[in-house]
Length: 258
Image 1 (cartoon, rainbow, N blue to C red):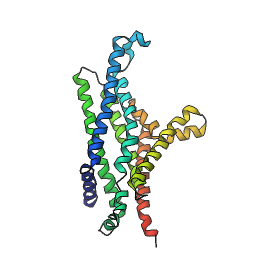
Image 2: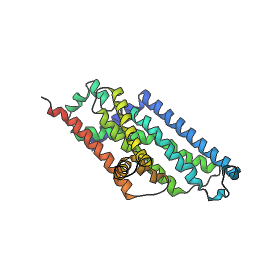
Image 3: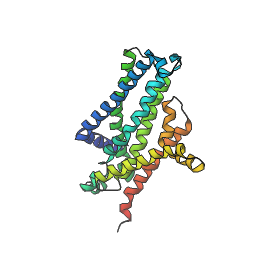
Image 4: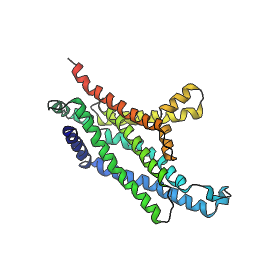
């Protein structure tokens, strides 16, 4: 495990010692902050005059669900752009600089290399998530009421969704030498999974249900409304480890070449 952590620390520090770290931090804070402020202001506006919005009893609206449930749904859009940028250099940059071949000469297994790189990116993603916890403090400070169960599940769901997307992004990065191609490929793949969530809304039948079940958003949505379902946990676990497995197979293809 020491070798895995050593690679992870190297990957983690490389994110901070590049323009990516600053850009991603600013992007997360800016986008999430805008969504949070808009939702709080909308809630305050509706609460002052519910009749104007066709609501006879505003007390029936769950404050946590209105603000934090919507917040987690909205910031999931950010991952479509965040993940491709975070993962595009993972293996592609190593291949382009021919440092990956050098890494293969070290006493490291393919699994240790893949696991270390994946773990390093996950660490950086978790650092980006820490400021989001500040919104709970801000909301409590301005007098808001919080139902802790749904809020914590929302954060858990966002973490799981981000990790699943990161695993897919690292896999795409392992297929190419170009970070730009990796970013475009990852964005395209995530967009396809995003579109899967729409299928059941515009069609019906068994295939529509299958496509919807394949969408990470369909499973993520339960977390945003405070529902913890074992099926959703299994789905995200399978999604993450499946793409981790594909990345490992992708790296091992070098042994198939003559």
